[in-house]
Length: 344
Image 1: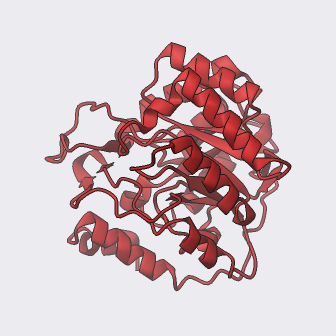
Image 2: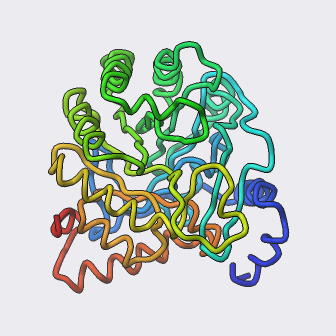
C-alpha cells in the first residue's frame, strides 16, 4: 500500500502512538540482506565505509529495536538512541506534536529510553551487522556529573557501535546545551577521548542550530583539538519561524521543513571555519534530492533525516539516493566525494 494512502490512518493516532506502532511494524522487516554499495554514492568517512550517504537520525529508534534493519529501506546508515546510563521515562505526555501544515514536528521527549544496559543486551544478540550503526549517547536528567554520564556511555556502548555520537544539543534536558560552552566542551571532550582510550570507535559530536558566530568558532576549535571524528550539524531548534499549525507554540525542539534554511546555514558556517579538517554530517529539513545535493555541495559528507519520514514515508531514503545519483552524474561527478564542499 502506498504511504499516501496509509498516512491518513496513521495521522488519526496521537503522534507518539503512531511512532510506537511504526516501530512495531518495522520489527517484521527482514535484516538478512546487505545494502549494496553504489560506486557513485559510496563514501568513506571517519574510516567507515558508507554504502550511501543518507542515514536515519537519532530519535527514531531510541532503544536499538530496528536501527539494524533500516538498510532494507535504503538507508546508508542508522543512528539509534539517545541512550542514557540509567533508564528514564522522559517528560510528561503529550510531548510529540505533528505540525502538518508546516511539515514539521515539535518534540520535548526528554531522552526517554530503556537505558544503556538493556540496549547493550539487545545489541549483543545481533548475529551480523549489515550497515553502519551509530549510537547516540546522553546524560540522565538528574545526573550530578553529566560528563561522567558521557564517559559511562562511551565505555558501555562502544563495543556495539560503529561510531558514537556525543549529544549535547537536545533542548529538552535542562542545562544540557551549556555543555556546548567553550570550557565545558573542552572538559567533556577530553574526558570522552580518554575514556575511549585505544578503542578505534569514532567519536562524533552533535550540536544545536541555535549558535552564534563565537560559539561556532569555539566548537570548531574544540573538535580539532580533541580530534573529533565528525560533527553532526544540527539538532532541533528552539527558534520559531512563522508557522501555521495550532501546535506552533508548543515547548520543545522544532524539526522538519522549517529547519531547512537554518540547518543549511549552520552547515555553511562550520564548513567556513573548519574547511576539510573535520567531516560534517548535515541534518535538518532534508526531504528531497535537491536538498541532499545542496548539502553535499555545501560541505556535508553524510546526511541524516527523521521528521521528513512522517510526511514522505519509509522509502524516502531510497528516493533521495536515486535523485542524488542522477544529479551527481548530470554534473559530471563519478563519486559523491568529488562534490563535497564544491560550493563552499
